[in-house]
Length: 309
Length: 308
Image (cartoon, rainbow over all chains, first blue to last red; front, side):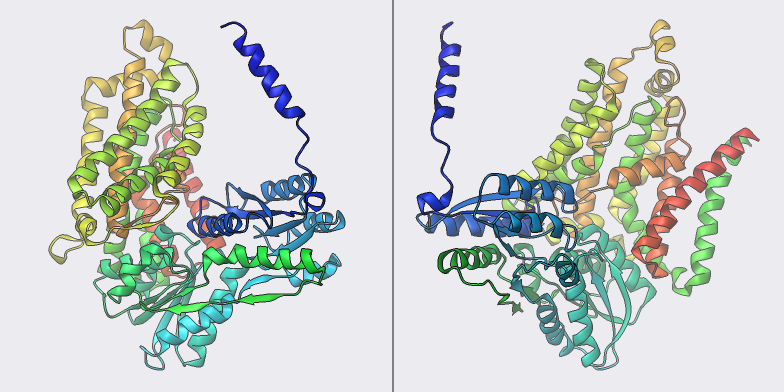
């Protein structure tokens, strides 16, 4: 048995002598890197799964490397991922930036190195991009329009002048700000009175506490508009605990699996589906198209649908 | 009289907060608020009880938030996917929590590693397992689990609340009236002296961690029952609330001194603060600043009383 170990090492050494996988251009098959936020988050998990399925179905067209960070706010880790992908010689990076400003510098380095960069999910800050003299196309949904459409469904169940409250996401996140703005657009247009706007930090438990507090402090609140479905679940529990089922309407965003039974029995009126499983795929397809016909990449809007059952 | 003054400062902080919040927002003094606070207390009270026991021995456990997430994830899978009955899921959750707590305790005690480090590792492991268990998805459970967290007969008190009160009392009895409690205190005060005088020092410490884990498992069930769902992200940062409640209650970070009942008052202070800040509409940054300030102020008041 003594020679097993050396043999193993020899095998390892041999395998590492094999020619390194040549960069895509020579083999005719581009390498695309998908750099995500936290893969622990259901939403990004779905996005990554969709991308992997797409690659499996188009295996002849491109190679895919999927990476995510541990913690949604760990910017340094994501910057490191982009650097590694550039070092690996990928042709395109499709990225859901953990921060709309902090990633711009490293993405500029990637572009300077000749890598095509496509922005998905969280839109990079326009002013920061301009300062850096950079143009990165955004392929993704209009969160504001989506939230407004959800708000309009809710408005039909209310009467003008009703009190409503918004439970927003992490206040520094662009998509969270857009959803809040969309809710406000719809409520203001319908003449509702927004009595409170507080952050549930995207989390069910936090949102539950915030919703309970809002209901206690504003007994006349008729609706809670939640910037994601997890927070809507927390709000539903708070409404039940306050004994106000049926008196307080709730809407969410994202259309996660857990929200379906609540949509079915009306405890949640509406949510928005931005086709999470396709979001990364849209970005990858945009990247492949640019790589293929050498066109100039442009911003592209992807669909958001209101779901009511 | 000394016992009474022990509680006086903490209760004064609590009453001051209730008065202040009520002055800013008149709806604060209502049954709705009382219900909110009673609803939020059980999980934190259970974990703070276990944490007090661990901290009295001079240890700490940073993994409780992740263990809460993992146990909850297990409850979610058992009830939403496998359709198990609540009692079975409850037992399962307590076993998972207890097993994780025992592991943290045994590794730390038997291998002589600081519990701070071991539980920091466990914080990562348990969170990873929670995501694996649920495939990173929120599980909706619904009415099957909600009964535990709903008020009995329309009053503000839920079964979860009553059980957590019982646990607090049992924890205090163990700590101040039983041999195991004397061992915990002796170990925390001076481990070498305890060893020399024949007090077992390994098993009581492992037991404290195991109890904390099991109570965290129970807390996870209560948490799921309050929300009607299991969220694998549940409990992020929960360890800090639990440790804050225990420290506000006057338990020493160095070990050797502590009270479960005072930790419970610490829980009341944290829960009242949370509820009050939401009701007066404080912004997220202000909530954090205010919470941090109250924690430091409460500990300061307690230290100051001890010295005078």
